[in-house]
Every structure is written in structure tokens, then in C-alpha cells.
Length: 268
Image (cartoon, rainbow, N blue to C red; front, top):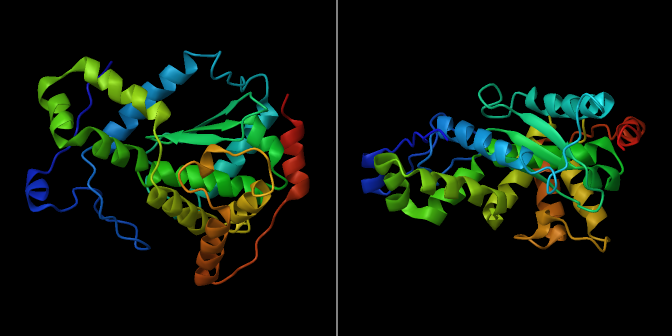
């Protein structure tokens, strides 16, 4: 396993300031401290994807060669969002997407570096492509806003992460990598991912309220996705998403129900 190259700005740490990204998105300043570099995000993403794909019992990933139409739909939606001009690291991160065959799981998740996994359960549960694009935008935001490595910095602390940098502790690196698979985001991270889903979708063909439509649908469902684990009130999230949409101008986009049905029909 390759050693992580963690970038630490000592002056910023001493001063209690952020050592996170330069040239921050104009929509929102980032005040968090993240000791991981962009290269660390990429390396962590590779390591986590290798762990996931080495466990086909837990993560039965559909073969893209066997289901080319499904992956064509998935990648078309992903690329539409990435080409919005609003996604930070759209060119730097991998943005690899995989479909996990599990119809009973309403979930999707992203790792550092832009590795995104979507369950067949959530694809089949939704009604339109804008809803799914809203979910994809939410997950892309988690990666682009580097929420995973933010949480790792908080979870392990500066001293432990410096130990990785100085001591080259391979066991600790493995522990950090494994913890990403069970990492929970904070309420503020979830709210920010909702907000950026709107920002990403607004310049595209999609209705930028797709994530709100997703939350409206699950609010009446007996199944509770992981999306609600740390921010359990979908009504608040719908209101915040709609407010952001109005702030951007309230442009009504497409929902593409028929095209989305083709996506669903391409799955096993």
C-alpha cells in the first residue's frame, strides 16, 4: 500500500486557520481544517475502491461489459454534472462510477478522489432522471468538497495524521482507509452537499431541485436511506434546496421520466 503524502501547513495550524484549498469556490468559503492534500484524496480513493472491489459478496458490482446500456446512462448523467463548470476538481479527480446490484438498498456513496457507487435499489426507487441527478450531484459534492478527508482529520486528529507523515505507519494507513467505508458525514456536510447539488445542476438541462424531489419521495417511504442518518428531517432539506434554487434564479429544468425509465430497464 502506498504511503499517503499528507500536506501540512504548520503556520496555519499554529494560527488556528484553515489549511484547506486555495482558490475556493466563490459560492461558499471553506473554514475547515483538512490535513490531506489533493493527492492524498486520490490515493485514498484508489485504496478504498480496491477494498470494495475485492469484496464482491458485500459489493456485487455490475460488470460494465455485461450492462453497457446501464453504464452509458450512468456516465451520461455524471458527465452532464461534471461539465456544468461548477464542480471543483472536475478534471483532477477520477470520477469513476460503479453500480452495486442490491435492489433492497436505497443508497449511493462517494469516496475521496471521485469514486462513486450507486445501488440498483435507489435507481429503481426513483421516478425521474432529475431526481437521480440530484442524488449524483449530492455525492459528487461530498467528493469535490472533500468531506471524507475533513471528517478523517477531525476523527484522527493532527497528532495521529502527523504520525502517518513522519512515521510511515502502514497499519495506521490501512486503518484510516478502512474507516472511510463506515464514515458518517456531519449535518453541515450533508447540508452543503444538498446545496452544491443545486449549484451543479442549475446550469444543466436538469431541474436543479432534483434532490428535493428525491427527499419528497422518500419522506413517504418505509425505507430510510443512509442520506437521512445524520440529518433526519427531509422537510428541512427540501426547503433549503428550494431556497437555493430560488436564490439562483428559479429556472425550471427537465425531469426526463421516459429517458430515466430506459435507464431502469437496462438493469437486471
